[in-house]
Structures are given as C-alpha cells and as structure tokens.
Figure 1 (spheres, rainbow, N blue to C red):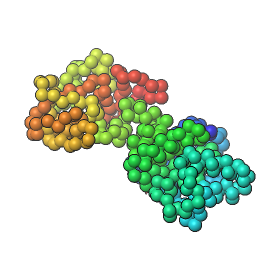
Figure 2: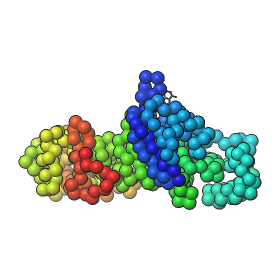
Figure 3: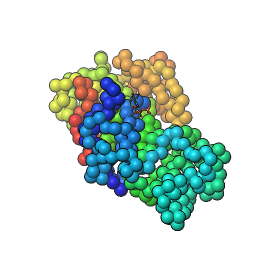
Length: 368
Ligand SMILES: Nc1ncnc2c1ncn2[C@@H]1O[C@H](COP(=O)(O)OP(=O)(O)OP(=O)(O)O)[C@@H](O)[C@H]1O
C-alpha cells in the first residue's frame, strides 16, 4: 500500500508534449482510474509509473522516494496490458508462477499464492492447460493471476478487459474489485470505457490532451463536472451544452427564456462579468405536451432499450432528452422543462464550472 505522487511531470516524444505538467497524487490502496479519449496520454502516464518511459521533466515520487531514475525492475510494480502475452509453451500454472520461480520465492510460498489466485479468479481445474486451450476470458484471468501473485505494491492495468465480451467484462470487473478488497495494492487502471471507470474506480482522473481535467469520485465526476470537457465526456448520451444569455434573473436561449431560482440568480450574477454556457444531461430534461416556458422540435427518436433518446432542435442547437416512451410527434413542437437542481453553468472563456449552489458540495471539488 504505497502512494504515487506526480509533481509537474512532463513527457515529450520529440517536439510533442503528451503529458503536460501533471500534478496528481494517487492515494495508497486506492483504485485510481486514468480515463480519457484516445491519445490523451493515459498509457504514457501509466508507463511512466511502471518505469517503461523516462520522464522529461518534473518528479515522480513513489512511497516517498523520487523514482525518476529508478529502473522498472526496482519499482515493485505488477502490470497487466491489453495484449497480455502468456508464454504459449507454458501451462497456466507455469505462466502464473514463472516470475516467482525466477525470483527464487520459496516453493511453499509459491504454492500458497498460486492456490489463492486460482481460487479468486476461478481458474481451478485449468492449471495444466496451455494458453491455446483457454478461452479469451480465461487467458485474461491467467494474466491477472500472474500479476496478482507477485504481490507488488503497485498494480498497473492498461485496458485489461478490452479483449473480453460484454458479459465477461462485467464479471471480470467485479472480480478485480474483489481482489483489490483483499490485497489493497495501489491500483492505477487505464481505460477509455466510462462504465468501467465508474464501476471499478474509487476515483477518476480524467485526462484530455495530456492535461488533467478533473480528479474526483465517479459520483462527483458525473454529477458535478468541473468543466465543459468533463460534462461532455462523461455520460452517454452526453450532456447538452447550449449558448445562453443571462439578464435580470432570467436565462435566455435566443427568444426563449426562463427564470432562475434566487440561489442560482445570485451565483450567476456574481459570474455575469463572463459569458456563460448552459449544460444539462439528457435525463434531466422533461418533455411534455403541456405548455411550458421552453419548447423544442422533435427530430428523431432512438430506441436505447430501457428508454428512448429523443433528438430535438432547441434554439437552433441539437438537444438530446431521454424519455420512457417513443410517442413524440416528429417535426413538431414539444415543451421542455429542465430540472433546475441538475443544471450546470460554465464560464465560456475558461470552460470551468461556475459551481453548484443547489446540489451537495464535496470537499475535493472546488468551486471554480
Ligand atoms: N513511443 C512514442 N513515440 C512517439 N509518440 C508516442 C509514443 N507513444 C505514444 N505516443 C503519442 O503520445 C500520445 C499519447 O499516447 P498514449 O498511448 O499515452 O494515449 P492513450 O490515452 O493511452 O490512448 P489510447 O486510449 O488510444 O491507448 C499519442 O498521440 C501517441 O501517438
């Protein structure tokens, strides 16, 4: 159980800076998710921790020691990659215990760790099989077991479940969390899958173009996005973002407007020197045929299984709302109500949130 601390860490490949001054503390024993779009620098950040890439500037501190120049083999990390390579000529048992045998761990200790890992990952009975005789999911679990038996302080996972089908992913996620509850290593887990991030992470570090956008619990990242990027990246369908104007307690979208609650009006008044942007999640929009202050035109409807995504135009911008039914008249006007406690307002220039006057506050979320 050890802490990892990035202090203004930068990583360049030639002229390109892919990690841009990262300041991040990964607490001991937590499951920290590195999340973000393709190419944002997640894997590079993980590889810096593993010691597989050199840091260009800044400090990486692990367990209180600067490790910039410490080789990978001396960092006590275990890694699982997306393309985990099992040794094809070794059995499951040999694959799992290989590193321990190389390290001359006593035989009895190896047996104990093996037994534990086999049980935890439900690999009992497969010990003597070769990788070619396993399913993709079983191979993935062997790769996890191989990392687990090392009992390293840091467990680094790079898209470890991306080769699994949807069902196996769900059970593998649960297994992983269970394993962690037992061993409590510090886990750093790279994914671009937000469901995985939400279900596995104690906290999420959201990156974009090498810059940390938000670091917080899955709940706060979802409900209280720190900026427009976070609001749009997290959640599917994504948060609706609209241009707006604020005047005398009212929010105007073109010719349409609605009144703010006194708390919001005060907050917005304080921020009104800047231009603001309005954000609302699809599930926080109520559609109705009963007249309301705001209206939109239905463009199309998509069946998502449990509910329907209704695509609309609102003040010449696209809006997506979620609805329990599909009986909305195409190309016609419907009325719209925003659930006030769920609206987000952002400063247009900085793209940062202007805060959450109504919803709950959390100490790790500062009001920008
Ligand atoms: N060895 C390298 N040499 C040059 N550029 C690299 C190297 N490794 C990564 N990059 C670049 O650095 C950027 C970040 O890559 P990285 O693999 O960290 O992104 P990622 O967020 O993990 O993406 P993905 O989800 O697609 O794996 C990308 O633009 C990538 O092309």
